[in-house]
Length: 77
Length: 77
Length: 150
Length: 150
Image 1 (cartoon, each protein chain N blue to C red):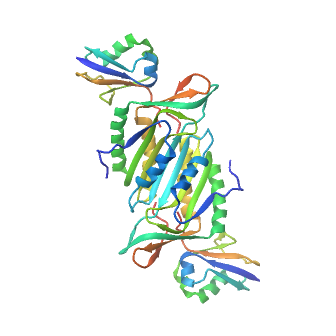
Image 2 (image 1 turned 120 degrees about the horizontal axis):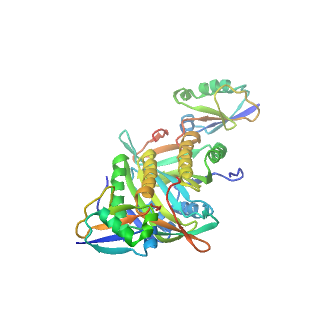
Image 3 (image 1 turned 60 degrees about the horizontal axis):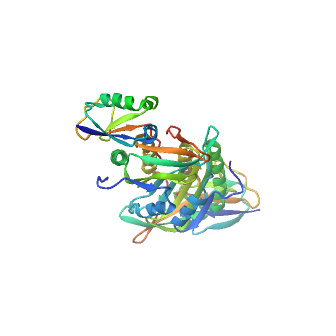
């Protein structure tokens, strides 16, 4: 099972990555742990998570081709 | 002593007059009576009075060259 | 922050053209510490009055008193809100349905001040300035507009 | 009153030109029952951050999510206010100080609806849309903007 992870704003800068494809993560908590191991600087920045462009507040199971996005505080307009 | 009286909006329409020069009226109450005799339709329309472009709420003594204006409800903008 | 030697309201003969609004956006601005512009445009509506439809409004004003009153409004608004700019455009004469008869423009560093200053100025323009609109019907006849509904 | 097959937010590469705003004023409008347009323009400010002065902002967005979120915002605002039109323009890429990076336009019959709809949309655009501004300093370096101050 593959999912994609998108990094935006300061998170893209810190990770040096815009998009990542990851296999075999069950849910968003597992994904978060995995990403923080790979990019320790994620610990230092506030962000929220969207799955398929819906902001989630609790753990969500990930399905094939899910699009997960890590969103730092917005500053549009 | 001469003063001028200005009519605006619906008052100008009803009186057929934009500007009038009047002599020998002591104050705004006397002027009002005088105008209502001359233009009875003034009784039928709501208006406020300005003297030298200041809206007055009570009787004001009129001085030489005073500019009195009768102002129906505003509808600018 | 405000000057008394400047005219804070400009009269236009007929509708306010979009070119005038563009000029406002470009020149009226603002300096590099201005982050927000709030703009209100009033347009003539094809209101139904009885069985008649409004096709234009003919505006007249007690111009000298408008200028003096607008001076006061400008002072009030600048004292109340940290704005960098305030300007009002008002049409005189005929303005057809859909055309612009009023423009209020306010600028400030942060958006709250410009938005609130613009809104309050719109209210004051409508309630305090001696300006009258005669609504002309598509057929014949007319109706003297009275400001009330927000 | 709202349609779901229309894009309610338009992205511009770089600053929003005044020509786009004029077009909005002319075409976006409104039909002959529209009496009020309320417009908000956001501009890039030369803010002082520490000892550095902002010279431009570089905007990026999660575009697909912005479009979906803006669909919801448009629905919410149309349900809440009797407006006839709502549109948002947002810059992506570089926008220099003084230039326009955001435009919100609302139209309605009477002014209250357009004004309130415009203001609420500005707040929602800033709080709900996944867009990021990187403030570039006149010298070197940058700062990630965070929306808060109204």
